[in-house]
Image (cartoon, rainbow, N blue to C red; front, side, top):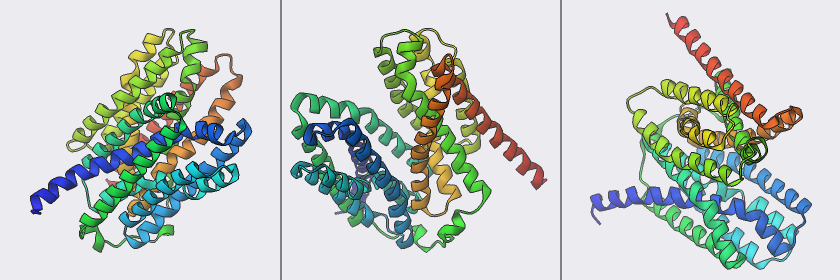
Length: 389
């Protein structure tokens, strides 16, 4: 096969791999509780415990696997391992009738498939892919998350849990195939000769922890407002719940073109300027959302919301890969800002639950948090400029 044909196949292979790795996670997450109840008659308490253990396993896998990949500077062989783990998990779900066995399988086999996208982004960085390509790949991941949950619920509702397991198995097989193809076509990369600091050295420094903390807070604002969106529409605005679905769907769909546009702008504008603009959009969105009284007003604000989160999700990954030299560590830490943000979001909602208008208070608190992050970043930038004069 000629080099141009190989290059063309590589251009197609990467988007396909990114799509199916994201789709696997996007399909599994909304189905998991349903499968536990339908296949194993799990009680609500048991569902909570099993999902908690599954998330703990996922958190550990998202740090351990990319870090080990950094040591060997090989991100594609671990990707094959993660793909096989996804297929093995579906096999266990299909054949076992024991809930404890399923819980164990979810801890051991359920975590690695969630690391697939992280390893793909680490490999792209390892190959010295430009930030615009990373952001375009992130847009593919976002689109998979738009399609995945409704696809999962539609198939399960129409054909039952066996069809859901067949869907997961099919996605898992495709992931094995794409991982093997990527491994086969891999060549030497410019990053192979680079010298990276040791892991502990990369975790030192207020600047690095400041970046991780800032993005964790930003993720928390998104998760908190998405979590209470349906309650806000139904109880505070007094509108039908369908408005919440329309609003959240609009934000998810607008995020994709926003990511693509950011990828183009990043080639001509500084990352700091784009981040500042995105975070300012977040302050505006949360502040105005706290004032709305009609659901259509909330819907009209979603372009601001999409632009804000596109900067967090798209540019955030490139920032982490600039701050942390090891691609796997950078991608794994950025992934876990979402997990840590979910914990903070739950605490924020709980603390504001006693307010007279608790759901409006969540939007107000989110606006304050994003403003603090924006002001802190501006102050730090000003201080650095003053120090270099």
